[in-house]
Image (cartoon, rainbow, N blue to C red):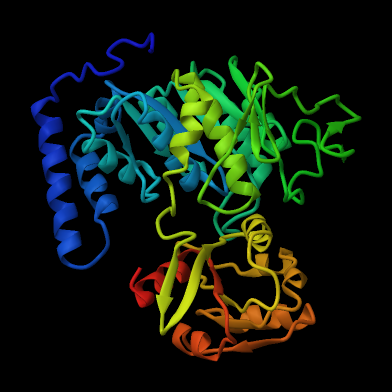
Length: 418
């Protein structure tokens, strides 16, 4: 399926040094798990890469690889692509979202028998990982503000992607509706454009090419000053269907909720086609995905059904608001600002919380008072609680929607036993 030497399925034996690195990494991960410090994939990968800095590229030589990167939706899209490609052979993937080089190395270390590697990559590491693993395809979904204390401004990140991917031989599958993604991808010689939509537009009003003001009539966009404009897509999300390059409409049947996940499925179908998996087969297999690392799970806690939803930044919160049950469904909001979240909570002011009007709202998390001030300014009724237990016990009848950012989500999962 690939013209690259050694791809796929022809894994060459690892050198003694690489074998030692893999063994040491797995041992370090096992110790971390035994100590109750999580999966151990990150520390295991760090140990392995310390012993063999080229291990990531060595582990990928026999794989046809697809990289998935974005601000939002990359973990879910990675799962959907992996499920689709299993129709054509064994898959290795960093399914739990450890998406920096150490975590990716740990994932690939367990994939010696795999044919495909489906790898989620943190935005900041995309170009470097692409150099290491020589991917056959790269999926680019969206770019928006995130982790304001340490993430590069989105225009700068798009520029880094553009520079880093300009020499890549990979097929780039990119969202035609996000100007930043189009700018990043358009340096690549082989791009498949997907009309996946863009709900959040507040990071894409200035032209990434010249800085001029973008014109956005309807679903189209263009810069009147330099001519940079939306490319013609060959794949498209249309309601509950994916339109392929031949104009055929394929139904989307997902257990995952919301328009954003239909967009993820459309992109995933376009990626699967690069690897020879037809849209019908790919989309049918995606139905198997019920939840992604706990996201969208419904758990019973203290006698109540609670649906767990992850939202890490303004774009993610906007998409999440669109899929929760209507009022008077009770909603619990939880926000932390630890290292993995980004310590700057000023992004709360970019979120339109008035969309929660009519919902009974309960606020928890390390930064619950920051969130309370934001909701107060938005004119919403809410109650601040110390714990998720208290919030669940105070919520009126009905299934509860619980929306949390990254570490707050992990806190809740541990407490409810998910």
